[in-house]
Length: 445
Image 1 (cartoon, rainbow, N blue to C red):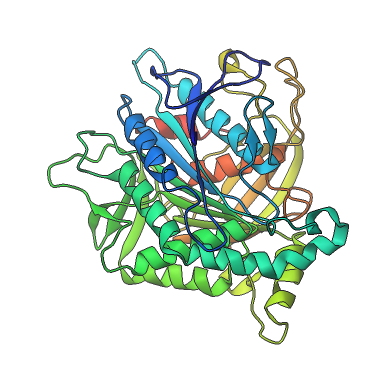
Image 2 (cartoon, rainbow, N blue to C red; image 1 turned 90 degrees about the horizontal axis):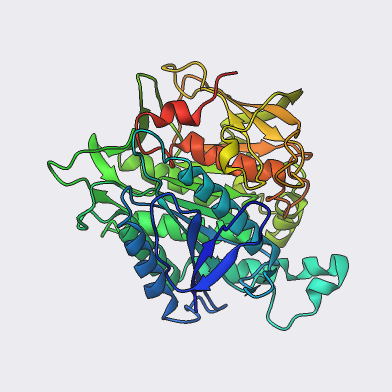
């Protein structure tokens, strides 16, 4: 089975996992999870997995307010191992499920006096051999780096393969297709880590260049656009992926340059309009730790130090923002204690300098993970995301993260980093569905 229903029964209780697509009522604390795997050749491991994932998304869109679909492609040294009986397996797969849990609880909070209903959360985990099959290198300490070049070539093969492109195109169509009799547009969030970001960026660029435009639907005439987030192509409303998020990307920076140029050539822009305020949010975000030696040092050596090639997170020519800690500790109270399952929280503050170009954002992130539901006295640190050219409004944001926040190449799901991922998704507008979400998204200082 490659599709699961994950139920969150009670605070501090383990999740319950049921194979298959379970029943759903608005504001249920459960989510759907689909797994799609690929071989080193670039071929899909099991041709049955993609149709099941598509069916899962299409059913989720039948929820009163549709679905939120999040695709995650893991990176080097990771895989799609998961024993649902013991909840053991790959640590990034487990961390991805925690992110889905946080999104699920956020949607469950939508039930209020106005009758708002939460959206169905669907996660799609894309698995591949993050280590060479049968290799002993992962257990040999520093020698594990010997697999970097081999796995990077494999990631390039998968990202350049027809099966991966087909999967992304069908996931997009299942999430966004205007042919379905559903008025509410469902957000699509694409996330890649490490070589998973290489896979994602490569396939995304190829799909952008495809003359059939498999990642874009024109909004049908007469159909109202209900979300405050709007993507336009040459001034006309467009259904398009909401955000691509690359974490410690192992993609050549030339790919990011080309994606940015392709979007500009097609006249694609993005805006958020809600309750009066307007700003230009990102469509692409690449965030890389300054402490990520794997993409900062090993990657250039593997590519040939004479070539001068860099990943997007280490190419200063791409940097659009600076991200830094400005104060610690600060007060950041949880918004809804009634739905407290022991999860961490963050406080995203209203954007500053609206109407000028790219705004400045302030976000408070937890300094540690919570021990239990009763553990609420978690100190937070205040960070500022400041544009380097505030009068510009780029679709692609690239910035580096401090080493204390993400300590190495794989440290992307600690309590601060996980909260930052959710914050970046909020900044992109991907989870905003109704105008009142402006007040729900941003909290005053």
